[in-house]
Every structure is written in C-alpha cells, then in structure tokens.
Length: 77
Image (cartoon, rainbow, N blue to C red):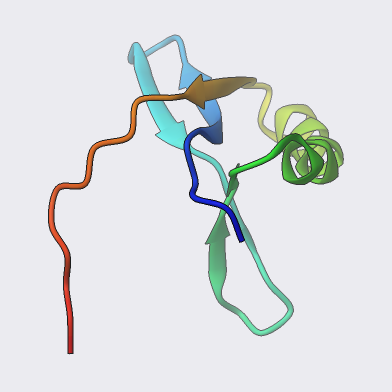
C-alpha cells in the first residue's frame, strides 16, 4: 500500500447550529465506521450511503478533501 497523502471525508452540515461532523454508519457487527477514505474508489463506494443519510436527515453532506500530511506522533508497542 502506498503512503496516504490525502483523505476524503463525508461531512454533515447543520445550518441551524453552524456545525459540522463526520458522517458514520453502523456495520452489521454494531461497530460505528466513519465515512472517510484515502482514494476515490472508497469515496464512490460511500456516496450511496451519503445520499441515504441526506434523505433521512434533511442535512447537506459535503465531500471534503484534505491533502496536507503531518505526522503528529508515532505510537509503538
């Protein structure tokens, strides 16, 4: 796998509170998974779910690209 140089995130916008948050979905195992990806294939695979969330909540979903990589810390065993 190549180094991750950019990330994409599905972000919901609440205009009433002028607030944003990362969208997530619950897996079949009950685990919440954030809607983020490191390539366009993942973004495309999440778009249908983003449409469902937008339809269910009435909120806008933004797809944002973040492309500045900065290692803040390395955690080792």
